[in-house]
Image (tube, rainbow, N blue to C red; front, side):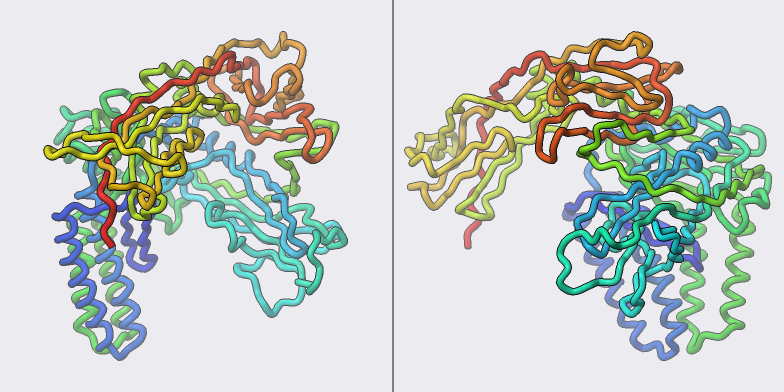
Length: 607
């Protein structure tokens, strides 16, 4: 997956695209035209002498081209169902938008990450909500770090990037971790020749910063389907219209007759949160969105044309553009979105954030730096007090595969192959990783599976079997791969027939009241302690619910061991909230399911 964002701060243009690669011939044709257009545009930039003018034209023109590229890719993407979580569910768990804000702020804590470096220590701010791109926390928010206090009471100010020339201790954003963009690094001066962790350095103790979040006055919810196309729905000052609902995308227009509250400031928050379900009732993942209407694009194209007529950039011209933009935005009373999904849409769930009334929450943060290693040698349970409750809305969907059947497992298998490397041509038998796979464990014993390669007859059907030495191919059931060396084949194979073992756990579910816990389980505030002798982690899983009946989100887990690589003594699971009920899942049996196949082989690539 890739996520392309093209926010243009000065012009407000934005396209979001998430998709896998692959082009149809029609798509390739459009791409070729786009490439020509891009090449011409880049050429035209070379003739502009004024650097300010050139940069402004490059920014706006580049954004418009990226928007066009996003349109082409999204329009031509094949429609394949891909399911995810309902990211709007968290809005339903809290009585008011402000309660959600308070949970977001008060649930934030900082972890020190394990490191073997003698001059780097990574700090990871952990938020109570995790959002899959392009979704982020749905309200306007900002987080600024100010400083870290070390164990010798020295305060190190935050700086936006690491400096090679600064000889002291530094606090800056982590450059090594793109998956956690909020991570920070404390960098100690590098001392040549020291290879081990330098225990003598002062360690980070607390992190200071400020967080600001704007909560909308209210959240309005709409359920729409095909029959709502063209209809206008009104609630208070908010009007919502479903302009179009096609197979895999929806076009929506929303307007609010009341102006934005002053607390929103210069922000222009996205008021539309859109989810889609298909006919199975499951939520589809988004493949991308276009948030510019035809009128907005036409306005920016007109501004670009005006820029291209200029020979030099001037303050007067800049003011004219800004005034034009403000005037245009002021007249834009509606918000437009064209949202694409991976799958065929049956119905839409839309949440509208009404920012005509808003609350600004600002808090100074002074967070202790905590250390929780995945494997710990401590004999006691470390506390992780958590003042907020957060639910795991994906748990029910994940746990449904505790009752996975043999047919469901076989039907979920997809087969792909590659002959790019003749000495290691391979076929991959893949299936989505499920809760059942999680409980299968590492013990995957299977008997030898017969594999036979065949030639093709005159009609292209399966012909004679090919006699092969045992080293010509290898089946790896754990990885689901069949690898074969074409150099050891007397002739090119056309078909392969055989079976590959799949593994299916028998899982027993039980419900336990936390007031009557059996031997081997204990609860210390929000931490569940699991004795590994009674409930070994390779065959047991535990999920917690609170009094509301919702699954609680697990913060993290720690395995306490007798020695570094020794047996686990007990595991600790920390939750956002107070468990009142546990669900236990135990693997009681493990079956091997033979998946029979006949695959028509791709011809080797000719060199």
